[in-house]
Picture 1 (spheres, rainbow, N blue to C red):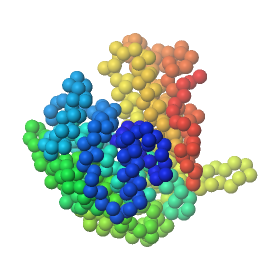
Picture 2 (tube, rainbow, N blue to C red):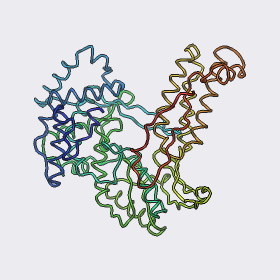
Picture 3 (cartoon, helix red, strand yellow):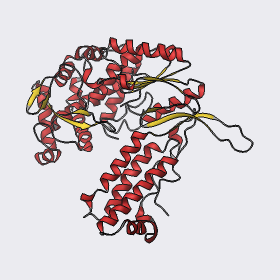
Picture 4 (tube, rainbow, N blue to C red):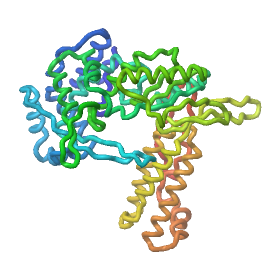
Length: 461
């Protein structure tokens, strides 16, 4: 587990803490914040400057293998320059108050399944290291106060934890769903209100000054530096934590009487008993977001009634729909909330498979292509296997096999029949392409998904 995403150990847990000073620091901060929810921390800046914290921050940044910022300094260039040398310089600049973050490099990446493009800010490597160090120190303090309804970008709280809540609440009878996400959340968070939220737990003026400098660093686009007057840049190491710190105000103001809120960063679902409760929940949600200077995205906001034969909704890559089991002999049919990879997730998977088998890779050996396909399919299946996904797994596996056969045909300048012959008949294991069969785990209400078998694909035998 990387240092930046490493979870603060829960109170009473000392595993791995004594042998790891950074983890011991996180553990101590978490316990102190948990023991006194009203405490404001005033001595944190010196911990950000610690050499072991900066080194752990570098390890996290290096493991992400990101692109260079506006200074064009790559991770490899940092290693050539000397990691210890750079970290020592950063520590000196921080301690002496000379550190100034550079503007981030603005790029636009396509939104999957849409013609829109998402703005992404790429800070220089040195700034990412400092942000990672800030996250290491601040995350345990805020994590201690975050509420159970929040799941996104939090240690030891995965997407499947959020998905399990939907299963449980549907089983209880909450089958009216409000689904929405926050419009341009990362870029619209007001800096002033965000700092007010931070100051609820942090009163170290040096830390607050550093955070303000990060927020105001600006972005460079088309050779021009543009100041940032709102938002926490999407792509910054600290941005997910800052987003959760700000939206914690929404979580705190929410009342379970309005419905069960499930928030994954800026994606939200509310499970309700009735249409009237769902309509009231949507109105309440809209009002709370307005108070934060945010608003729901109109195109993605709706109320869905879960019923057999009715429509469903998409959340965290899955499509969720109420279905009734066929029932075995002597047993009654069961109505439950099923989930499988959403259409958008299926299209993204096909796009990636097509990219891995594109014509420009014909000079690569089939073994390399199969290895790349297996790596992608294993990762994709590791996430989507916790669902009623067998049928869609079969479709993706068949598509991968078809694309592999087409690749072989083009590579050998032969017909498609030749490619199919090699994959299906001439190779005893279809060139080693994993099967994706027998690995799906059906969700069950009130049962921890982590207790299931390990994820991963299997080679065809």
